[in-house]
Length: 129
Image (cartoon, rainbow, N blue to C red; front, side, top):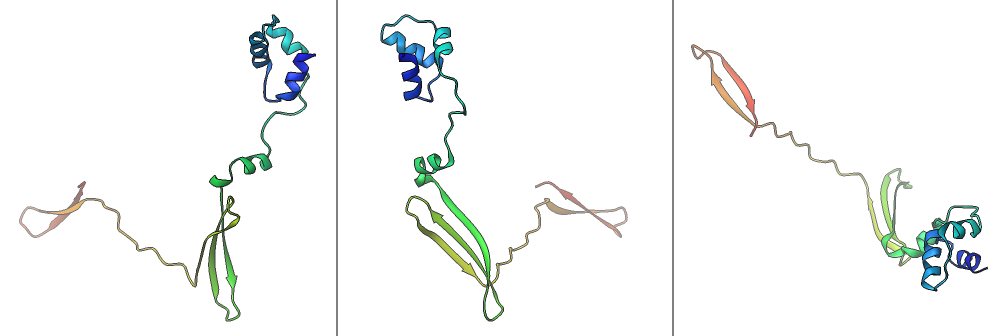
């Protein structure tokens, strides 16, 4: 039967698509008849992980971060980036110790001075910059 052959040859096609292709061939059949005659699927027609990796090798990079203890009891911090399309190490970084980030105070605005009555006491306010 033509409907079963088309469904087996094109597993991602559903009944409306096969119905449209049959109409292009000049065959008069209803979409309901096509869906009734199509074989039932046992699993969803989705990509498996292997297919995804084969279809997109240039867009995938694997990154790993790990530590390596040395014989002198130091610890090396290592980051490796692997490019799948070349199957080679794309980037390798190792350091003795992570660099501390510079601490910055949040920008809360400028501090302005407002004199109290008599000029003996001062009050400070923060106003948004």
